[in-house]
Image 1 (cartoon, rainbow, N blue to C red):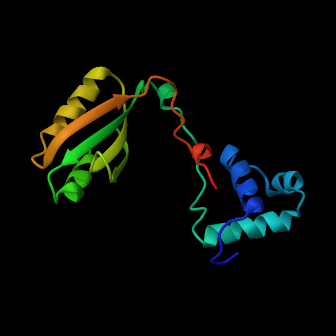
Image 2 (image 1 turned 180 degrees about the vertical axis):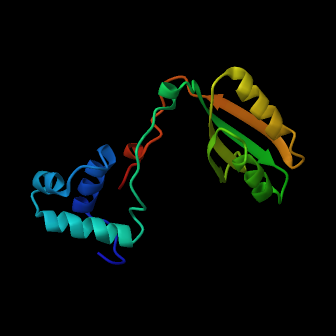
Image 3 (image 1 turned 45 degrees about the horizontal axis):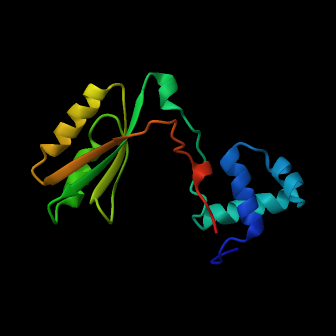
Length: 153
């Protein structure tokens, strides 16, 4: 499987691991109609090729008294997006922050306990000299920020 794209069997294995990253290879093999060794070899090859970067658990922040999950869109003055990104990453409650292409130069996801914390965080980011604007959107429904939402073609 080196240097080739994933096939239907790889996708089937990935789908099962997206549902439960701890699913035994034997169970996956049985459901795919192949040997456990085949699943193990394909998993290891996908890991070696960087398709699988690791395994993880999915946490529901709302069960831990973190009530608001927000998306933050930041427009920066050029060429300061990297500096703004580094500042945003240091803000407590930021889960993910990355440079972006499109409407925003930097986008982030944060988890906050209340609306006041969200407002304070937005003001804090807006105070950065290199920031032109900050938009914040709050998830209303339970967000599914987990690997099982990723699609493959």
